[in-house]
Length: 192
Image 1: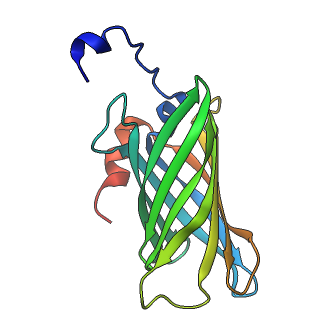
Image 2 (image 1 turned 180 degrees about the vertical axis):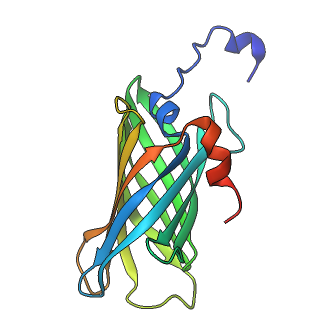
């Protein structure tokens, strides 16, 4: 961390994926988990912002995800977490994503990213849960995000796959989101 030594070290380029991801995303989704849950529509808000600490060596972002019932607007699910990027080249690298849900489930996901997508999953016993979590217990989660920066407004497809102690890995949630312009973010980020 000596300033004189750092002068000779090239600075990391900003992550193009985060230039796209950072902000507020809104849209609709469909969830299901056969045979336990039949299909249900929901509204999805995903907020991604710089976390503390955040600098060229600690590329950390925080996120918050809120799902509400499409018709009743009743809250269905909320989760928060962090994204930590570890570049391996200019256009890709490793990603760690932590996630804690209001139902007591906590995940540590690891995977990869490119400039317009990421794919992470729980590995190495990366799931823990609160003592009073309900069965069936989740045993594995995979999260896939694909961004379409060329669209206007920018769009994202966000998918979650899940396995439980009773069922194999299968699709659980699919959201199609659009990025809000900066002037509309304050409204969406406001009180629930």
